[in-house]
Image (cartoon, rainbow, N blue to C red):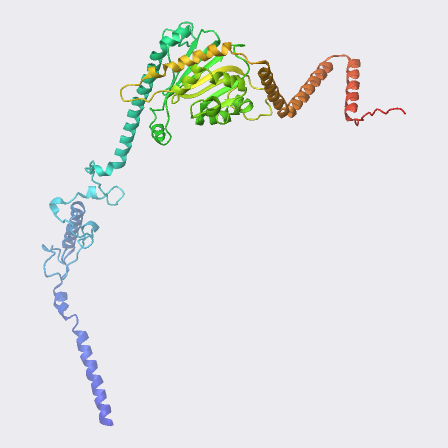
Length: 485
C-alpha cells in the first residue's frame, strides 16, 4: 500500500517537472532576437518614421496592391512575399473588386487596370459603367406575323373601298345615261338641285352607295325623286355579310301626285318578302288594306307576288290592264313593289299621348325595281328601261280612273273609321289638353284683372270665381221626368 502511494507521488512530481520544462522553452527561439534588438537614437527613429510616412503617402496616391514593411532598425524589406515573414508588419488595404475568390475569372492585369477615380464615384461608392449595346432589328420575319396580318387587312380594306366606290359610281351614271332621254321627254328639269343656276344637273351623291335624282316640271305630279341604292361595295364587312344574305342594287321611285288626280283608294303589289314587310311597317297599308289570298287564281297574275287591296274595284281595274299585267309577267325578277295610295304617311309611328293630330297624308305613287346583275364587263340597263315607261303609263292611268259611287262610299267609311279610332285612342290626352288650355286662360284673365287699379272689378271677379268653384264641387243631380196620371 505504501509503495503504491510513493509511486503515485513520484509520478505527479515527474509530470509537473516535464510540464514546467515545456512552458519554459516555448519562446526560447525569440531569446536571441530580444538580445540582439538595440534601440537606435532619436535621429534614427525620426528618420525611420519619416520614411514610413512617405511610404504611406505614396501608397495612397499610387494605390499599390501590397504595402512595404519596416524592420525595427528603420530598414525596408525589399520582397514582402519572401519566405522569411517573421517580424514583418503588413499594412495592406483590402480591395473588394480585386478579390479573386469573390470575382471568379477576374482579370488582374495591371496594364488593363481601371483608374481609381473612375472606379469610385464622388460619394465613395463603386461607379458602374453600362455599355451601350445597339438594338439590332430582328432578322426573323416570323416574329412580325401579327403586324403583317394587320397591314394586309388594312390594305385589302382600303383597296376594296376605292374599287367598290368607283363601281357604284359607274353603275349610277350608267343608269342615268340610259334613261336620260326618257326623263327629259317627261320632265322639264332633270337633276334639279334647288338652285337657280345649276351648271351640272345630274345625280346627287348622298353616300358612296346612295345617289339621288330630282325631276320636276310635269303634269299630274309635283315631282319625282329617284334613289339609286347600290350594294355597299365600298364596305368590306357589308360585302362579306352579303354572302349570307344576298342583296341587289335597286332603284326607288317616289312621285307625289297632284291634288284631285287620283281617286280615294290604296293598292299595292309586291314580292312576298317586301309585301309582308311593307304591310307591317307602313301606316296606310296596315290600317286600310287587307292581304288578298291566292291572287294568282283571282287575278291571273304570275307567282311570287302578294296583293294588298282596299277597294276590290280598283284592284281588278289595274290588274286586268293588259299592259300592266304583261309588265308583271315579263319583269317578274325586276319588280320589287308598286304602291299607290292617297293616304300615304310613311311608317307606323309609336303611340305618343302628346300627339293629338294624325300625320299628314299625301297622294303617292311609289315603285321599287331591281337592277340587272353586274357582270365583270357590262351591265345591261336597256333591259329595264320599260319599267320606267310603265310608271309614266300608270300616271296617265290614274288620272283617268274613277271609282263607282258604292266604292267611293266604302272608301270614305274606311277613312272615317280610322279617324274615329284615332280620336278614341287620344281622347284622354285631348281632355287633358283642353283642361290645361282652360286653366291657362283663367290664369291670364286673373293676371289681367289684378294688374288693373280697380278694386270693385277685382272683387266681382273673385266673387265669380268662388261661385264657379262651389258649382264645381256641388254634387251632380240627375233630373227625372214624371208623367202625371
